[in-house]
Length: 366
Image 1: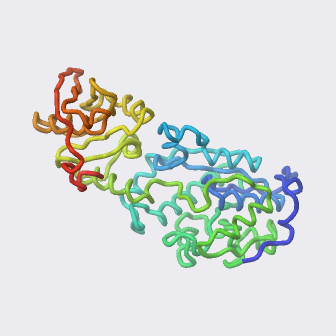
Image 2 (image 1 turned 90 degrees about the vertical axis):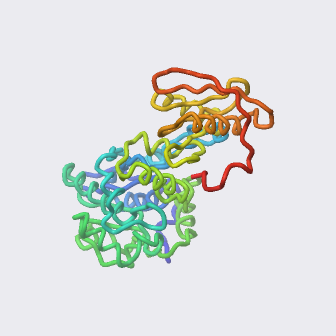
Image 3 (image 1 turned 180 degrees about the vertical axis):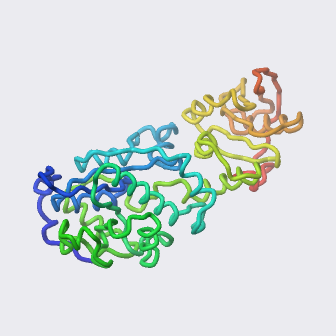
């Protein structure tokens, strides 16, 4: 893996160059991660006018948990894609694709990865949408931050042509970070970009990217190896699979997948699930959904907001109340008062003994 000597210039010299008359235009897929940031920067430094594009699917990580959880309040509450575009000095177009993306999640042509991540279908979808935007807006080619061998499903030498073909981008798709290891694309053949100034990164290691970031003067960037999609997360995927199995369908709405990101999820019985707030921030978030669910709160002690999803009889509600007491400050007390409110707003009170930790089977936790 080698870096062109020209990339070692100072940060000031490497500042995004203004577009000159007649310059070619590229649209860069910006995830907010390091690779897409570097790929866009490489092309900017070749005198190409670059604008970014970011697609919101509903499954994006992008600071959602940080913005809710109380213990993460000190972390920056930022959209990393927007922040990356600001560092690069480029315009970023954020496009919501929640409904269109459902087919990719529900029925991926190329299947799922280790969890419920349809990575190959997802990459093809993103590049196709970028191609449509490129053609509509008079741009010339597409940039991604892909690196051969970095992702086991979507970033292999044999799958990269699949993305180019199925997206309809073909050789208008340029991967600057590994371009020297791939056949020349149209931008290279036409002389729009100098192939010799592109890169030959490969493999899962991130040291070359981090070295390049240092040369560019990028001191801060999103976690290099961090994923930007909840579907790659094992725990999240397990909760989504449980949702699908319980409902008997893979259909979902935005609120469904947002709630899977928040709280402690337990399924004590096949016909109902509890979502338990873990701190003040999550309690506040779940409180916004209270009218859609049966919800429980302890009234004698500080404790969580608990949403009950499904159907519940009196025995189920007693169990739910005991679990609510367990996750509050009264867990060691003999009795805790719990308020239960149904979807019509009718409230009743129960005095319950908190369930013991050893009475909660591990399989209840999703």
